[in-house]
Length: 369
Ligand SMILES: NC(=O)c1ccc[n+]([C@@H]2O[C@H](COP(=O)([O-])OP(=O)(O)OC[C@H]3O[C@@H](n4cnc5c(N)ncnc54)[C@H](OP(=O)(O)O)[C@@H]3O)[C@@H](O)[C@H]2O)c1
Image 1: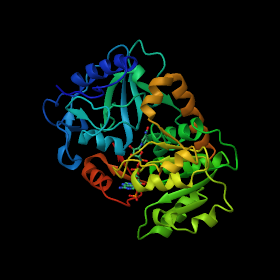
Image 2 (image 1 turned 90 degrees about the horizontal axis):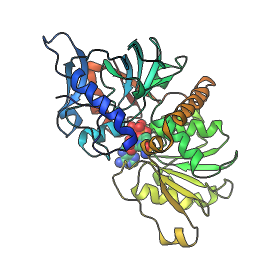
Image 3 (image 1 turned 180 degrees about the vertical axis):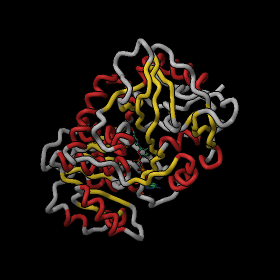
Image 4 (image 1 turned 135 degrees about the vertical axis):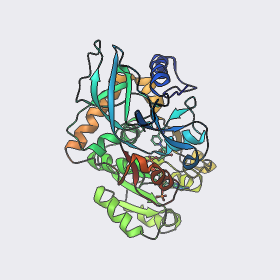
């Protein structure tokens, strides 16, 4: 039985949606009879390295139930969490076999007779993690989808559900920041980092953006500055004594956003102002966060964590929709763009998966169905 959208650990509130997704998946995701017919989907039947375990399959769509919606998926990114799920290294894991992908945008093709909130032509994104967006079409319950405005660029819509929401929440929920205040972040060229740069600039916040050194550093720095980054430093530059002089003329950040862990996060913490907060939301270096004793005693630093899925669970769909509309306003005003992207046809998924495993690619891989 093919399953997707069913996670092994999650809340009771998510349970109903998950069960429906499982019902949908177990009927819609059987291998298609006859070979040529069926819906293309990227499926993994075991955990392991994505390039080895993900396969392009043809699956059968289930019939449309009265509360169901049939959607054509238009575009879906490959995010680190998708990779971690396939590797079996994420806090929530779908039952196997599973369809990859948690983010993306679809267009409604057909709705069941009892569906009230969605109509053909609408653009929709998944309500929750575990949707399985790497497929050409899906039949899912109405409540597993959120309608979004369709007057924003496709690549913005395809990358809206996870990274910009994470950036917006972290800038809003941990410190009371006012225009002119500063924040510091590492992996500033990540999808989240680019959204942080742009939303922070729109809110009048000043940013210190840390990236890994690379051969095309100047090009990357220019691209980030074009997005609104005020300062871009390498990890090495952040460790130099000259940084003390820098902070004579620049406000100490009260908020640090840590995507990396290890030495990089220790460095972010070192530059935080007294009483400031470091929020860890990613662990790209796979190294623990180590804080000096003095950061606690002399600076009273606060260490926090953030997980978008938990926020969604705690705050519910209405608040999620409200945030999506706010972000769409940023997009319409030209204050928030899609991350640097490479569009990859679904059948070339191996290229996208390989690129995601390489350092310094600075380009979100977007599967185009
Ligand atoms: N907590 C949440 O709710 C939440 C939500 C969204 C994302 N995330 C997490 O945030 C992280 C970034 O996601 P994304 O979609 O923005 O990523 P992305 O666009 O794929 O970018 C990955 C970033 O990680 C950096 N990186 C990779 N390996 C690294 C290493 N060993 N040391 C330092 N930096 C490294 C890359 O830098 P280079 O260019 O130098 O390779 C790049 O900046 C992931 O861990 C993701 O799971 C968490």
